[in-house]
Image 1: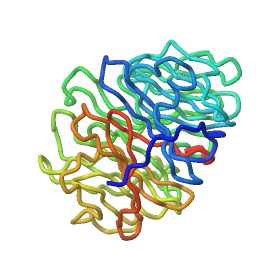
Image 2: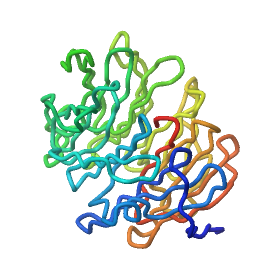
Image 3: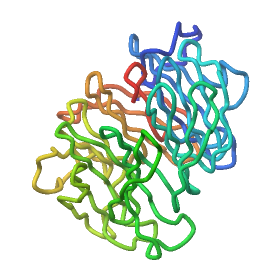
Image 4: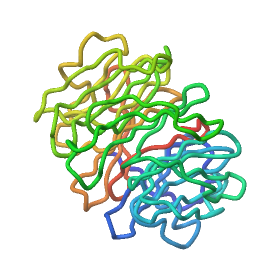
Length: 337
């Protein structure tokens, strides 16, 4: 390990670097954000607490950057914290969500926020308030934009056996916030993204109750249909955290390590690019500027975690960084991801 110390000097801004979103423990209120500066790769810990003299909240889920602001989704606090990337001071705490998961910026006027307990919240980006909800059944999770539509994973019922509800992708028109279509998927579709050929990929875990084998789906968003299904081994594989590289031609996900798969591959990879080797790999992100992989290690969910930076081509370790409690996701400032 070669951890960098938390520097005493305050960063000039948080506009260029990598945010580590540390979930913290459920009901402990110890969520935090760490920041890796892109210039010198020093790490600053718990930057929200230090900038605002208060806790970020309970379970930090995800983050997006837009228009020199950061939007941090705090799941169990039912809020989205809006901060300035200049100094990470709070601009507004948006409340009224129902276990929020992800935020997607639609345009300069509005954003969508998914919720574990149903519905999509529509947020006004001028007043930072929820203006309406798009009614859906069950847990909504990840989103991807395609033309004037948003494809949203509708996971299924959170507190009932997965067999009772069919999981699907819901398609919403961003012009009028109306549901226009849907696509049936495998159980528990948690991750969604789009490649350079404008094919949509969805990773389905098979369900929290292991009802079926996990699957990776390739979807034609124009025809709104699944055109190829890759099936994992039931009871053996547990794929998660689907990502795509900065050129849009190679998929990465966690499954006994970090797996690499070209979008034109005929089959799933047989071995991981980066074996876990005893680490508890938990989060995965790809720097869109240089393609480096960032993988988090939750350790034992009690100690502070670690983040490892790898070369995307050969899986070689580049650098190790200290993180907060349960580092779960990443956000790259200056890129909107």
